[in-house]
Image (tube, rainbow, N blue to C red; front, side):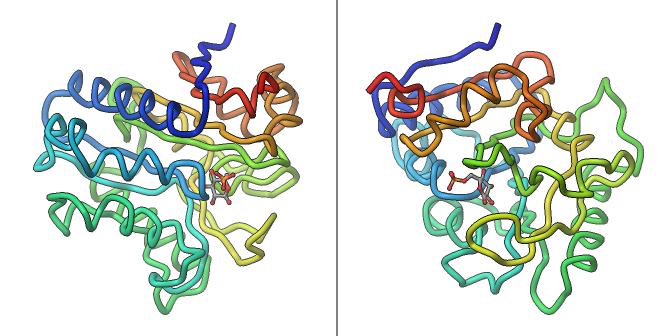
Length: 239
Ligand SMILES: O=C1O[C@H](COP(=O)(O)O)[C@@H](O)[C@H](O)[C@H]1O
């Protein structure tokens, strides 16, 4: 049975997810790796983390920031996931610049960017082999698209079959129609805590299918133990 927190609206969802994230970090000693999702849904959460009471509760010097996926566009392009996260959170809080591990898309084609991101992840982790007892990430944030994608793992994409690499290039999939770099299932599964954020009536049709475990990327990513769902009433069809 999915662990779903029903939120009244997008603001309530952001408040509750922020509390959850702060508590998840507090339970992690030493440096902590947070993997951010992109798109529009997490923006309110990121804005909250940059301000009190959440800002005062976060141990900024020990936090490292990663991305579950990226659109291959310039870093200042509004379609960039990094751009949104920087505007809402990373440039608004005491984040050490060398602790932001963005997907290095500048001047690289998607395959080269994915390989460079893989190298950065391995450097942070300390090797190329994932140990189930020592997850890569401490907190993983994920969203779902109206087609059931998560990160940039789109239905039918060859990236769904990747079992070895942690980051790969992927097709545009949905809007915005630009090439992507995405974490793969092995990397998404390598987290101590995972939360899906689902908001808005445009998720109403796909959410029950994902929760029912249909063969969709988001449903597969949700098979890891202890996943938390934060969904608002619009997405749950209760509004
Ligand atoms: O393209 C993407 O879509 C999903 C869902 O985004 P949202 O705008 O519906 O919240 C997102 O999780 C992913 O990171 C992003 O690149």
